[in-house]
Image 1 (cartoon, rainbow, N blue to C red):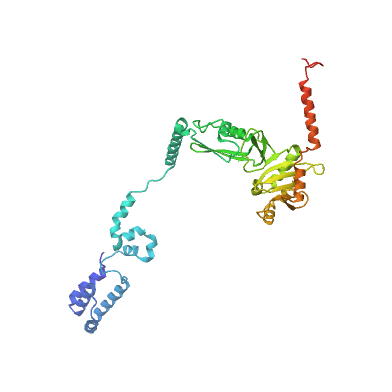
Image 2 (image 1 turned 90 degrees about the horizontal axis):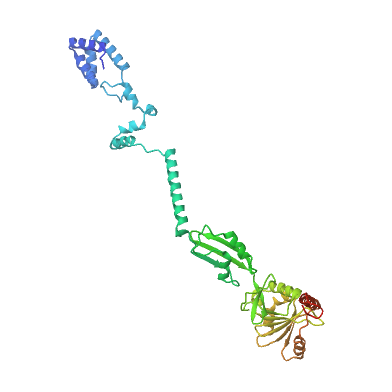
Length: 391
């Protein structure tokens, strides 16, 4: 920094004067503050002109005095203001922290981070990854289709009791070893649904090599006897002929035909399952006085005479009736009109049993239908024959 001319001139004058003021001025220019006592002594020994010059010098120095935080060395005010708190908003924080003692060790690391910018994920990278994903997916699909991994290895069948697994698998028209994608599930579902015992069927693929078949069958509410076999009577009043089974969970029905058969099946549907399973056999026993009478045998030894139109309501109270009768007692429970118990050996029981075991009498409309069918059969057999019975 260039020294001012007035200061140089004052230095020369002070050297010539060789007075006490010289030491004080040198001390002030050197940055040291003179003691107050010396300043008072110098004031007394000054001449008038020298005092005026010193006063002028002090006024100028006071006007040019820098802030307290600045050194006596020549420092540019612009550099000092750069680190002033007021101007921090105009300075990069990274540059300020670089000169901080705490961050001196991190200066090199930060410079290195700036030299290594992060790679940007561009659209080209996205398309490249998408292309690789598609190629991988297509490769896996081709491998799956043409390898044994796509073969059907398991067919899980559930829910069937009346229909065997073998018959259901035959209806599917595909089996193990066929390709998963070539199995026609819609056609298989249609074929299985045509079975009279099937109410609903669901068929789905379980990737990678399993097909599940879930069958819902109609309940068997009874059985009909044919020679030595028993065929299930379904809840929709269909007889499942061709599927013989053991009558363990429903009663055997005897002599029921047509309307009586349908009405009896409808009543059995409304009887609770545990009570229906406790019935062994049901006979249709019409009489001249009652064309709706039935005779039932229970597994616990009791016999019941009832009306098939009301049996569904009364039989649901059978357990409570049995508790009132007691275990040792056995006889006939008359539910045809009211509700009464007739022990074996009583006159009433003997009379009822005598009427029950008469030859069953079919309803008149059934006899008419049978006669009409017989006439049709005879007429068909006589077609093409002459009056003598010869062809």
